[in-house]
Image (cartoon, rainbow, N blue to C red; front, side, top):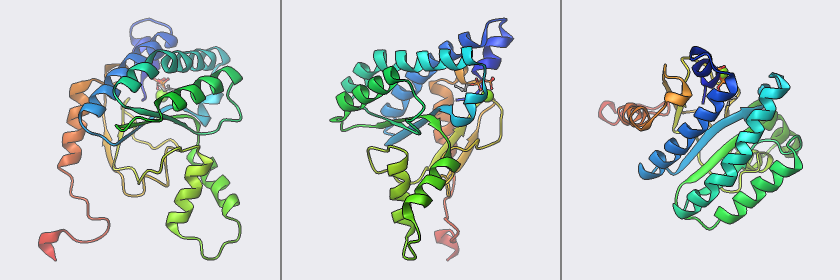
Length: 224
Ligand code: IPE
Ligand code: MG
């Protein structure tokens, strides 16, 4: 979710206005993804690197996130969507932690899409923490390390690797997002600023993904 600030600046508005508009795009995207039978949707709401922003912007983002959980949890429960917040929890406010725990608890019985929201998330940090937990285990497998990453990130449900990564805001970088899980991810870059990301653009990304041939380093079936 990138481009909120630029969206606001282009309109002569404060950056916070872009984040408010961005939150509306989140609601629409969650609903489109659930309707399109996406099994897991992970949104990068706040990276650990975002702590470098001005305190007022950080406060606004945290406030918006709390509001989102407050207003959207019930809608998610109605659509059987489970909510899981991933990332560090040692630097979030007590209030936000309570909201997170409540949203996760009240949506836990859902059988539909898993909505993962990454907050204070840094893939490099997670990988280092998981490596520390693993210790000097010579028999460590890829699967076991993946499970350790899940633990570190507070992933409440096991997930497989990322199939499709969508980056908005006309940037071409990963920004420390799910680096391990994106090992074989297909990448889709959109020039659109996040608040403008809508149903049509999401479907366009899914269509793009649908046309990709995933070989995982092997050969296509018809060239074997
Ligand atoms: C939203 O976009 C990302 C976050 C929620 C932190 P940005 O705030 O990065 O917007 P730009 O890149 O400055 O336009
Ligand atoms: Mg940005």
